[in-house]
Length: 450
Image (cartoon, rainbow, N blue to C red; front, side, top):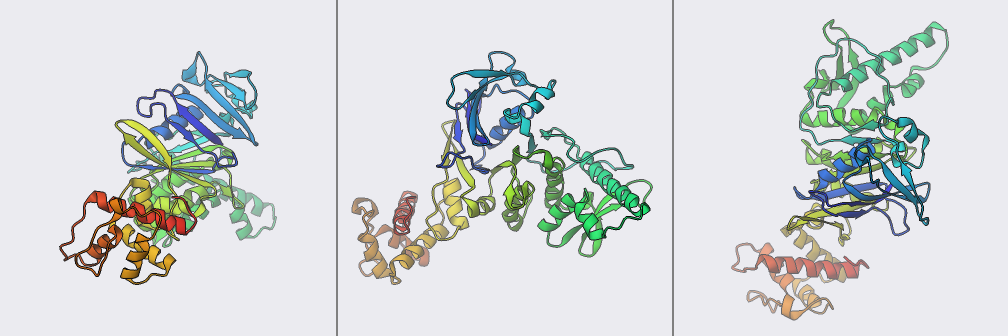
C-alpha cells in the first residue's frame, strides 16, 4: 500500500507531497481526496493509475509504499522512465536496485513481489454515460484474467459480454454436475458461482432493483436484465445513476481477486446519484474489495460530495480524508480538520472539506455549546461564551442593541438567524470569525483540538 507520493514539477500538481500514513507509520487503507474543481484530484488519480498500470513514472519525484510492514521508496531511473524504469531503495538502506520490468516484460513484475505494480491496479474514471452495443453470442471472457485496468475504453459492451459469458459458464458447470449425478443444492452452487460476485454486489446496493440474469429469448441479442418494480428491464434501460453502480461496479469486480494488496482508484463515485445513494457508494466500492470484513486493496476516492465524505468519516481509523485547495495555482493538501460536533453533519463536512460557512453549521455549533455547558438560555450562554479563554473582546464582541445585554458575536449572529426580520447586520468576516470561535470552544470542551 502507498504511504507517500511526491510529484516532480508536474504541470498541475507541481511538487505536491501527499502522506498516507497513520501516527504509527502504517498506511491508511482508504484515502478520500476532496476539494473544489481545479484542485488536482483527477490528476492525482490519473498519474498514479498510469504508472501502476505499467506506464510512465515520469510525473513523480518519489513513491513510498509498504510491503508486509517494510517500506520501499522508488524514484525515476535516469533512462526509460516512460515505460516505468525506476530505482528502489529499502527503508534504512542506502543501496538502490534498478527495476526494469515493464508492460512488455511482465514476468519480471510477476516474479518481483517487492514491486508495487506486482499487486495490480484498477482505475474507474468519472463518466456520465456508458455506451454499449448488442451482445449476440458468448465468447471466452473470464473473470480475474488481468491485474491491470486503466479504464481506457469508452465502449462498455465488454462488461455486458463478460456477464453473458460468466452466466453461460455457470450454466455449463451446473449441467456437468447434473449429468454426473452429483448432488449439490442450488443455493450452494449459486453462492460458489462466478456470477454471484456481481449479483451480490448489485443486490446489496439497490433496494428496489435486483439482478435477474441473461435473457436469451431473442435470437438477435442476449440481454443482461434486472427486475425493477415488478418488471424486467435490460441493463441499457437503467437510469444513469443505476448504470453508474452496475457498469463501474462490474468493471472493478471483474478482476477483484487479482487485486489483493493492489490499488483501486475511483473518480467521482457520486456522479448522477441522489444524495441517498451518494451516502451509500463509499461502502459499496470499499465492499467490493473486502473479504471477511478485511479490506484487501487500498482504495482512493476523488469526490465533490459531502455525502461521500460523511460516509467516510464513520471509519476514520482506516480512512484518511485529504482536502485539496488551489492557492494562486499552487495545489495544497491538508488533512481534514477534526470534527467538533458529536455526530457528522453535512454542515460540518461542507465547512471542513469545502470551506463553506453555513447558517446550519453556526446553529449546530451554538446549540452544541449550550448543550455542553448546560446554558440553555441565551443570556446565560452569551455570558458563558464571554468567559471562555478563546474569547477575545477585540475580535468577538458585538453588542446587540435588541437584547438584554448580549455582548458576543456568536450570540448576535444566533439572534439574527433566529429573527431574520431584525435589522441586525454582520459581515462575512464576522460570520467566519464566529464559527471559528465556536469550533475552538466546542472542540476544547469535548477534548478535541480542531
